[in-house]
Structure formats: C-alpha cells, structure tokens
Length: 339
Ligand code: HPA
Ligand code: ZN
Image (tube, rainbow, N blue to C red; front, top):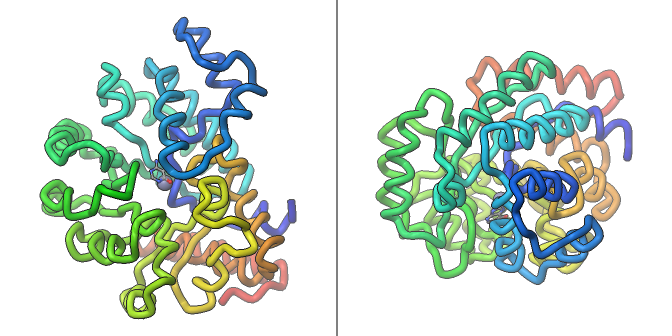
C-alpha cells in the first residue's frame, strides 16, 4: 500500500461494527459460547463470502452476529477495529451498529452499548481516536419495531450521535420510516440513511426530504439522475462511498467502472469508507488504495476524499477545522495540493 494513503489523515463515516467480525474472531467466539456454525475453518468462511447481491451478504452477516453475546465480545470487536483504523490513518470514526439484530436474539441494548463504550473510551485514551456511535434501524423490519428500538435507545442518549437506516433497500423505501426519523430529529439527533446502493435515485431524494437525512450512505446511483447530482452539489450533501463493498455486492462489476472519480470530479462531497471490511476484503486505506489503482486516482484525489470525510462528519465546526488543518499540513509536507 502507498505510504501516502496509509498515513493520510482521514475520518471513517460508513462502517458497521458487526461488519468487522473477522473469520478468526468468529470462530473464537463461537467456541467460547458453544455456538454451532455452518463453517469449521477460516477457509470455509472465506469461501462463503462470495456474494451475488446485498441480500446474499446480509444473510451471512446476520448469521455471524450470533457469536456476539456479552459486553466483552462487543468491546473486543470494536477495539480490534479501532486499532486497525488507527493504523490506517483514521483520526475520527462514526460507526454504525444494528440494535434490532441483537435485541431479536435476546441481547440488550445496554450490553451492546456498554461494550462499545468501553472500547470507545480506550480508543480515545490510547489511540487519540474520536468515535461517534450511530444505531441504524433495519429497513426490512416494521416501523413499529424501529419506534420501539428508538425508545430504548433514548436511555443512552448521551452516547448516541445520530441514527441511520440500513439493511435490504429494495422494497423498503424511506417513506416507511418517516415517523421514527421525525422523532429522532425532534430529539436533536443527526440523521444519515443508506440510499441509492441498490435502490433507485428517488430513494436518495426521499431520504433527504422525508427523513431529513443530512448525509447519504452509498448514494452511488445518484449519477443516474442529472438533477439530483446538481442538488447534492448545491446543498453540499455528503455521500459515504464504499468502493470494495460495491464491488463485492456487484453494485459495480469492476472497480474500474466505479463512479467515485466521477463523483469527485462533479463536486459531490464523496468520501471513501469500508462498510463491512471483514466481508468485503479491506479496511479504509485498502479502499483508498484499490481506488487509486483501478481509477488512476492521484494523491490529490485521495486527499480530496479525505477532506470530504472530515467535512461530511458530524463533528462540531471547531473540531472539524482542527482535523482539516492536520490534513493540510500532511499534504503540504508531502507536496500534495489539497483541493
Ligand atoms: N447496505 C445495507 N445494509 C447494510 C450494509 C450495506 O452496505 N452493511 C451492513 N448492513
Ligand atoms: Zn453500509
């Protein structure tokens, strides 16, 4: 990997902590909790990670989570991710988790959040990494389930930055979740939503208009709608793009066809993120690196994606400015122009 990319100061804005469950950790936790898995070796697991679309991935992703049972499991999972992110230049991470996928299995939100918060505190102290937590509602479940989950999350308001929307996009439009996001907004939470990954460009617009989303996760299908592109640029809506995820889930057939470079060139605030790195073959800098190779990104392009990651974050203006100054001085030292 290019040294410039690995040490480039960046924020990760699209990362599902359950998607960092590496095969060795999965086997270790299955043994600890005496859980029978359909796989018996790392090779068998890796073989199963061949996906044809989003749903084929989600089926395996929800199955894998069954090994996460106690506070220590969540703390260890997050700590492992924070160390990897830190080693790949991440200064700030806004991480998703799926409370409903755990509640359904009898694991309380308190178990999940106590574990995650333990790791967040350690990351702050030992790695100087700042972390925000964003629970996502599962769009294949009902809005009543999301409302119930939201009510449970309110008890932990002080450690939650915002809410997101993930899982099966096609057939589950943003309009299904208007009520719960209205409540989240009223309570002062930040809002983001997956849209335009497999779903149509209209889901991006509806996420902005009906859910009051401030940024969009994926959003790659925006390029099908010229008017929408203009709106995203004009309204400075950040998109958290995940190139290796898009490749693995066949949103694009080849990385060379990925729209990231076109998005950057037309002025969209696109950042590069890893989504579910244990399943998609790479963490954040691996995504930067793969794009640099496949799309002929210059260091200036990579630096712009890093700049977009801080701009698109939910950090306050002063902290954002401090991170951007760090990025600027890194670019100056490497004689790379920061666009
Ligand atoms: N899309 C939708 N739901 C998800 C994803 C994704 O990329 N990753 C984890 N849950
Ligand atoms: Zn995602």
